[in-house]
Image (cartoon, rainbow, N blue to C red):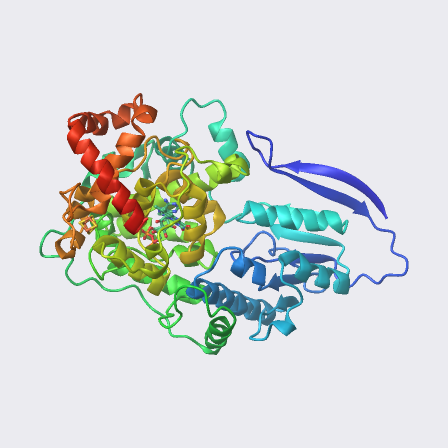
Length: 546
Ligand code: FAD
Ligand code: SF4
């Protein structure tokens, strides 16, 4: 066998993301070649139109899929997350087989004796040994660690690896790099406008439809005393035999993992995912924009879509989501502030954070701009706390593996940031507890947007606020034993105390940040006596709630 080593670089400012591939010419003598291409389909790549399997030749190629213990335990995964991934994978496996593909599938069973190895590489090595493929093919993975492990594996067994560009995103990794090249500022708003123009989404010639690029000022309403009223809940789906078997396996093998599977009602097929999208467009999109920042006790979904799991494992396509929303606007079924708000999340934020992830990795995961070192609070695992806001959000996370954006950003993320939780630990926790968490999307949102661990790459200032914000956007404070207005004393709201403490301890760092000026000015108004009382109360909060 002759080998020529070549490098395929992912465009990266740091030049770190480089895949090394062996180009080989096989001289086949004794060994019989069973499989030409072994196409690796990962748990978040469940799409028949995926560029990696579009050209699959069932006569010569095989698909490889694996449920691997390492992927379920490298962070301590929520049971519902495990069950959702494995069930969707098994359904996709069966669909591929029905379409005539040869699928080599490693299934976890209740008994670990049946495993062909605990790690991705061990299980893959088994298949490679058995099938002697000519080359491995994989769609760009959504996790730098996984890409690295596949690359190292291919390297170790000297098999050529083809990494296929992921066709599920509007913006390729290299294209994002090109867009950032030479720019003074890399901000979502500029990127989003570029994407709108490039893909002709909600455009009227060169102007935005509705005359504005952004309807955020219409989209920050809270419900007021009367609450959200009746909103049709997102479509839920009954478990079938495959899902029930998966749940049984997960409950047995991962019994000590957090969360529960008792309320499993998720889409696990493309058909179900499309039904979930249709249901959102019809019933909740029209008011999505107006209420997208609002929160209410025991109402986890409100006007949100709950599509992120289906979208991130490619049971749904981002283009279908954007088209469906635009169509709703064009037919008069939904107003521009809602449709633009939804499109901004998918065509804007979702694509933007993916670009940042691949541009900044692998260094990005190590960033810790605010030099934090604390663990996530125990309440983030079990939901047990007197803080009504944290308790309500955590109940949704434990039950559904879900919290909506503002609950993530302005309750759980905010409190973690104010406490000084290490951003990587917050990300690991998020990866463990949320159904939709894949590294490329979780990391820039957690470490970057929410914890400001990247020092301003994703957002220009930390999202820090006092209990007053939570009071304004929810009914949490009215049912809480603490007082959102108080920062000292027995009834002091832990969020408010820690807000002032956060500003106090980072005062020097943010002195020159124009967007923090107003908050720091308010801090300056506090007397030294008051600040001392806040510092003392903060010690108590860190002890009790940290
Ligand atoms: P909706 O509110 O209905 O929004 C529609 C869609 O827009 C979402 O499904 C999602 O695909 C997209 N979207 C919205 N905001 C973002 C964003 N900031 N980044 C990327 N996509 C976005 N989203 C994930 O998909 N996976 C994650 O791991 C993830 N981690 C997050 C961590 C934190 C700390 C924060 C603040 C946000 C995170 N998000 C993540 C973004 C957002 O909170 C979720 O996409 C959203 O809450 C999912 O619920 P939904 O499907 O009902 O979304
Ligand atoms: Fe949360 Fe403070 Fe409001 Fe209680 S008073 S719900 S802790 S913000």
